[in-house]
Length: 76
Image (cartoon, rainbow, N blue to C red; front, side, top):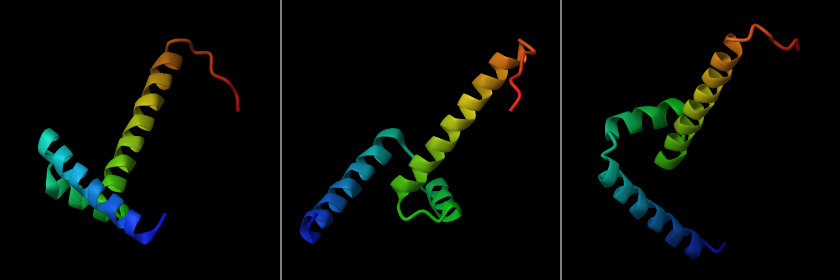
């Protein structure tokens, strides 16, 4: 990707993020704290990282609850 195309892509991405923020009313202070804590390069990277972590937690909880009722655990 050429530098000019990359720059245009980044500007477009920033515009989309601005629209998303307005649409779902994200808290900028929270985003800044998360971005800093994760040492993320961008807001998008920070938000996607948190969403991935949250999704993983949900999946673990679902498996734990499902297996909790059986008392049949696999040995590893």
